[in-house]
Image (cartoon, rainbow, N blue to C red; front, side, top):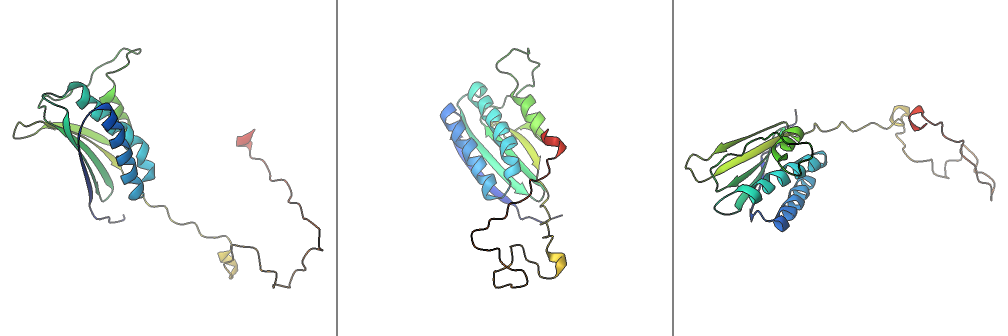
Length: 181
C-alpha cells in the first residue's frame, strides 16, 4: 500500500445553482491536481447531489461547507450545513424528476452517511471513494533485448541499409480483433 500524507481542501459557499456548478469544477480540479482522475466523475456527481439537497431543503439559509480529505487510500467528501434535520432516503416513482440524490450518492460511493452536529448547529452528510492503487509502470518490450530502445534506430546504425530514395515502405494491415467486428 502506498502511504499518502493527508491532503485537505475546504470550500464555503451558499448552495445556489450557480455556485453548485462552480464547486463541482473546484472538486474536479482538486482531484485532477491530486492525480485522482478516476474519482472525478463519481465525486462530482455525489457532491452535486449533496449540494442540491442543501439548496432544496436546508433552513434557515443555504450556507454550507464542502470539505475534501484525502487520507491514505480513501477520499472523503463532506457537506456541512446549518440545518440539523437529517435527510431521508426516499423511494421514488420511476418517472420522478427529483428525490434520488442520496440513492445516487450511495450508488457511486464506497460508503456514505450523515450525522447531526453535537452542538446542534447543523448536520454533516459525507461519502467516501476508494483511491485506486497506483498502476505499476509497464516495462518496454525492448528492455529485455539489452539496449532498451523504444524508438527506431538512428540512421547512423548501418547494420541495415536505408531504403532507396523515394521508396516508401508500407506497413502490413494490422490484424483486427474480434471486439471490433
